[in-house]
Length: 312
Ligand code: NDP
Image 1 (cartoon, rainbow, N blue to C red):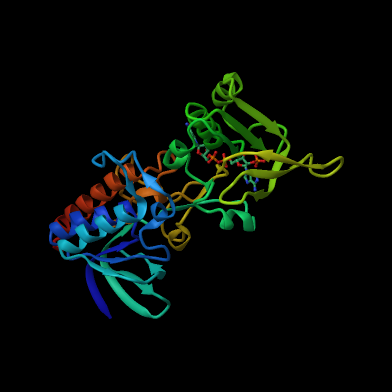
Image 2 (image 1 turned 90 degrees about the vertical axis):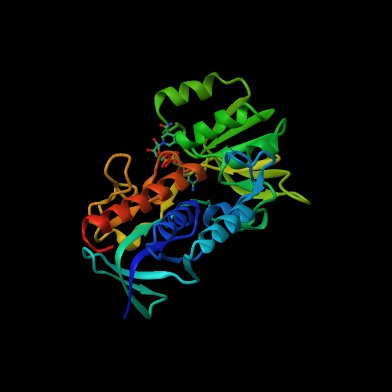
C-alpha cells in the first residue's frame, strides 16, 4: 500500500492553493482531481472578481494556472476519484477509483459543492449560453438585460438584488406562494422596483436560437394550471447547493445541509489531521477567493499538525 504524508482531495481553488502551500512546505502532497478537474469554476465563463486579474480570466484558464503553480513546486497531481475513506488519526485509509489503496498522515478535503439544477434537459442545452448558477460570476454579462432567478431562499433573494443592480429587469420565480428567505431579504426584494416576484411559477423549459431568449413557465401547478412564456436573456438558478461531503459524513461532523463543520474560522475538523477547505465547509461565502484562502489555511494547519505530532 502506498503511504504518503499529505493527501489533498479535490482540485478547485481550495485544493490547488492547499497544494501550492503544502508542496512549498515539503509535505510532498498528492492531489486527486476528482470527477470535475478544476472544479465548479471550469463551468463558468469569465472570472472578473478574483483580485490580480484586471482584465478577467476564464475559469478554465485560472484553474490551469493554479494547477501549473501547484505542479511547479512538486505536487503529485493525479487523475482519479477517491471512492472510500476510513479516517483514523495519522493512518487515514483511502481507496481511489474503487481499487487503489493508500494511507495518508494528513488529509485536506476540498471536494467543493455542486449547485443544484432543476433537472431540465434545456439547462444542459443552454449551459454557458444563458443558464448560470452563479449570479456574482456571470451577472455582469447581463447588464441592462432581462433575467430570471429561480428560488425563494436567501440565495435567490441575494442574487436577485445583486442582478437588479446590473439588469434592466429581474423576475424572481418562486414555486410556492411565499418566500423562504429571511424577512429582511424579503423586504429588500419587495422594495426593489425592477424585481418582479412571480409566486407559484415554475420553469418547465427554455427556448432561443443562439442562447436563451425565454422560458416556458407553469403557473399554479395542480388545479387551474396554465403555461406561459416569459422572454428573458438569462436564467439564474439559486435553489441551493449540495456540499460534496457524503464520503466523509461517517467520520466528520456536518451541519444539517451536509457542510463539514470546522473549528471557527479554521479548517480543523473533529478528526485530528483531517482538514476541510473551500465550499465543502462553507455554506456562506462560496467564492473562489475565500476557497483559496481556506486552502492556504488548511495546508498551514496540516504542516503544523505534522510538526506537533513528530511526523514531519
Ligand atoms: P434554501 O434551501 O434556503 O432555498 C432554496 C430555495 O429554492 C427554496 O425557496 C426552494 O423552494 C427553492 N427550490 C428548491 N428546489 C426547487 C425547484 N426544483 N424548483 C423551484 N424552486 C426550488 O437555499 P439557499 O441557497 O437560498 O440558502 C441556503 C442556506 O444559506 C440558508 O440557510 C440561507 O439562509 C443561507 N444563506 C444566507 C445568506 C445570508 O444570510 N445573506 C445568503 C445566502 C444563503 P421551497 O421553499 O418551495 O422549498
